[in-house]
Image 1 (cartoon, rainbow, N blue to C red):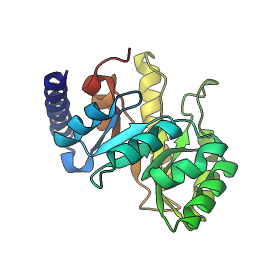
Image 2 (image 1 turned 90 degrees about the horizontal axis):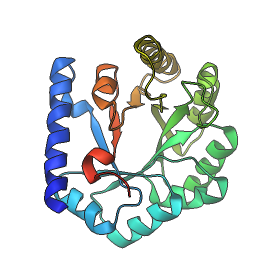
Image 3 (image 1 turned 180 degrees about the vertical axis):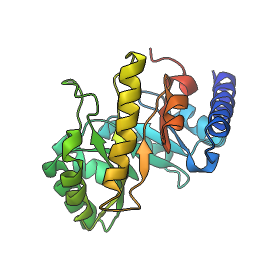
Length: 228
């Protein structure tokens, strides 16, 4: 399993490099976040030893336990799951990045909890770009309103937008969504020109995400293998 992870990491990094060359992107502008939910600490530490510094978790309690057990200054923990308000204190303490801000109550509570521990949280506004009822995220038309709210928080550093597009759509719909990703990112930058990061791309579509401006990829299965 460990040998396979090393092979997987090398393979993914090579594909990222090739996608950057093909799309005239600088590979240094791309952050690879290894989605480590339900993966044991030994596998995370092994990936860390082989150059992965960013790990994504969907569940606050699991992130807390891993953060406390592994206790490495090298790791950046990314919270990438839906946010429950009763878990925000845990998220504020243990995450370095939050990808899923989408509503006022969550934004204000995260800011409050970060203030209590004198911490500035890097954050994305999550956009429900495909308008799916099963996914969280603000409506695309509301990103300026939500972005301004995040900008007004003293302890949250607005970095950009996060997207979870619908998978397996036809080519025309996919092009429409990717065009909208770019448009929304530029729109957000009208209120903060430094909020230009894009969290977009998973195992199934990360090369296309790079072609469409992604700066942060969330990849799990292609590194750690399929969930069981």
